[in-house]
Image (tube, rainbow, N blue to C red; front, side):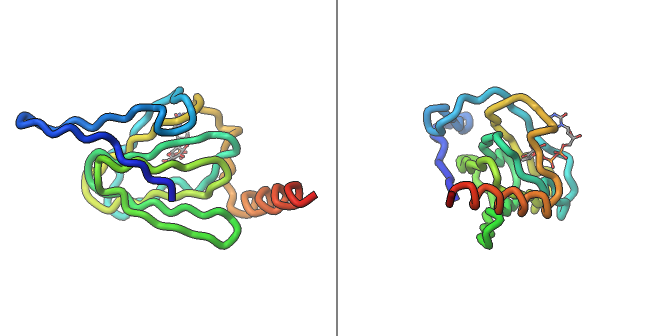
Length: 137
Ligand code: T46
């Protein structure tokens, strides 16, 4: 899991969390956030072919599961607003809402493109196999 800490600036009037893009190795071209998901709701269930993303939970708690298609499944609960999780290409990911009113903020390397998604797990496994055969040759 690649989790970086955002800079946290304490102030008597409130805290500021700062993300400097050099921390990750891609320029951010799109920002979106997801909210109003009921507790227990699970989203995602896909991988991207090229998109790189950073997931931050500024409020509440969201459990992220990452699966590399080679038997490694990792889970983390984002419940600290200063945690920034990197999710790269060819990682099957799901996001489960653990607390009411949780918000998931996403910084993405590119604009929205449906053809960049792999939405069937069987297609994902085929792609992972194809890529590892390609790497071995
Ligand atoms: C991801 C996780 C972390 C758009 O038209 N533009 C957008 O920028 C986005 C993000 C979504 N959409 C459309 C595509 C679907 O018709 O909104 C609909 C819901 O998207 P999706 O089912 O992919 O949502 P999530 O929450 O499962 O996944 C989202 C991102 O789509 C995805 O890239 O990695 O958050």
